[in-house]
Length: 446
Image 1 (cartoon, one colour):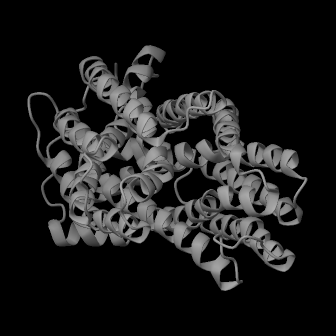
Image 2 (tube, rainbow, N blue to C red):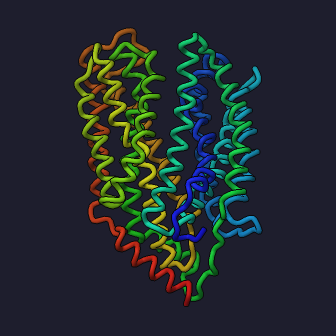
């Protein structure tokens, strides 16, 4: 394989396979762990939330360190692969401790093992994404790489949701049994999928840092002044926050407006099936109009289909499920197009800094996404409370329902629309990227 040639499907599959297992963990961690620790293990719900939230503070330190190490430490096995292998036992041990705990748990127990889980995940996921950015230098081929990775990630969640839906239909809804099953499945499959990836996919070796280029402080200033990066940070912050607001409110809307909370797994399954099915269409569109324009269209698609949600009420559950699936058909495109564009942004830095700092850039990228997730959850919980919504109430008055649906539909639509403004006149187009790559090749041969 050469860096500019198209990747074969089997190599794309081998590279993307780890995402099948790592993506499965996110849903139970958000949907089941808080309720399980509170109702079955007797921990106060606020304590559970505080432990998980505080454990994320370590990401501010761990992400940049792991990113820089994966850029700078060059072993005989490459730069990226070795960190993914190191992350597997950390991730799996912490996963087991959280998903299959003993009868005695505490705030410090959940805090410590949640922190270990996130560190293990970062050791696997951050180098994996940086590695993907280096599998090809081609503008469109990078979208194939990120598209396959997001497809595997979505497929993992679809499989989990399908199994949970099937179990619920059979009356098996015990959290402990479900979490045990998820833990066993991940512990068995993740080492195998990581092994396939690291054995079959080449890890690009870095070129020597060119003399006369900036030191650490000046290199940091290059990141701060990178206009393309600033634009990507702005749009992703708004895009992800908008999507997370709706994700936070899905179950509450089904319970307190539609009166159909039991359909929550079905809603998530339909949403993920739609986004999985439409990845090829969004990739095709990016080939025709360019990645940043396709990303604008994907965001506006979500905005347009979010607005009708404002007017739905009890009895409209079928319409709600249909709209959620339609608007969700562009979710994966938001992620794979943005990640592909992030790889192009790194090329701008590589020309200016004289070295490829993919790990550091994806550490920054990951921190922005985590900030976006936190902001989305904050808005999705705070705004409803400000309009008088209390999910513990036995009945929700119609005015409060109207306010809740306004937040559910209109606020995300507004955020998605505002985010597209950052992409107007985006500086790294296909043509400009080709010129950028020509300069990088010239610099490497000089």
